[in-house]
Picture 1 (cartoon, helix red, strand yellow):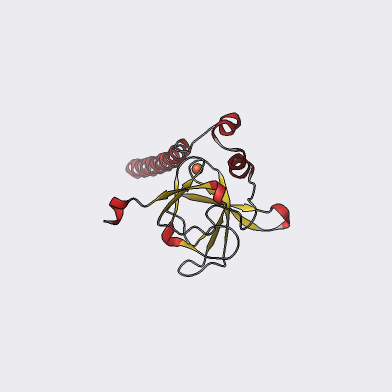
Picture 2: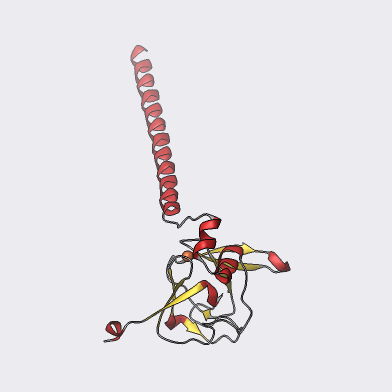
Length: 176
Ligand code: FE
């Protein structure tokens, strides 16, 4: 009888230890997840509004920081088809390559694909429309919107303000 009780205590002990270990394991994973989020947040370029006002032109500030839109068919890169990379006018983050740019006829530069992890999407319900806003993943600057009416292979149309971007031409060394 005493032996049976000892075995029972032993089993209960094992179950308690196993449960505690599992819980500790879970809390470790959660901590790691939070840690990763902090790392990606720390990679962001953070500036105060007055710093942005100082470093950006009036038009860049309006579009990148106040989510403005340039007038259709007026942008510097709408009809621009040189080889190179389009970078964020706010922070220099690489956003799109010229190979993915196409003539959409919408009045703004259009791309069917963004560079990996270069942009972030969020729901935009302003002006009574349901759209997906595109922002720079590094400085959170407003770039434009993405729509589902683009060409293959992605079927996407990244409709981006010229003012939100600068252009880095492909250097001669790259083409040799
Ligand atoms: Fe940026």
